Length: 182
Image (cartoon, rainbow, N blue to C red; front, side):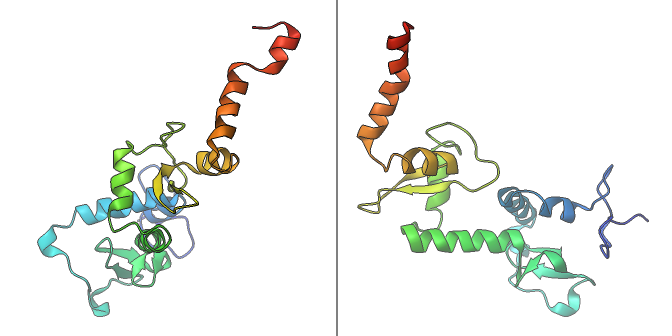
C-alpha cells in the first residue's frame, strides 16, 4: 500500500496526489483547516460526542482531538486538540478579551455581513476577518478584510473627512482639469 510522501507518515495519499489529506490540509490557510475540523465534528452525532478518549484506545501515531472529535496525527496536535481547533479556541478567546464579543457573536456578525468584507465585498481567503472597532469608544463596527481594515480605514485614521476627500479626489482628479480631461 502506498503512503504519504512525507517522511514517517503512514497515512495513504489522497487519490491522484502524493500527500495524505492531513499534510495537504496543513498547508492550507487556517480558515480552511478550521472548516475541515468543523466538517469532521458535524459528522459525529451529538449523542456520540465525548470529551476524552483514553490514550490506550488511540491508534499508533494518533491522538484524540476533543474539539473536532477525531483521531488526528500526532504531528498535527496542539495539546489536546488539533491545530485547527486550538487556533479557533485561541481566536475566540482573544476576540472575547480584546473586543468583548461573546461566544458566537463574531460568527453572527460575519454571517450578517454575508461572510464578506462590507467595504470591498471580497471574501477573505487566507486570514480571518479583522474586528473593526471605534478606537475612542471601543465599540465593534463590523468585520473587515485585513486590507480594508489596515490599509483603508487605518491609513485614514478612521477620519470620515479624509475618506470623503479621497472619494472626491477619485471622482474629480485635479490633474484632469490641468490636462483638459473630463
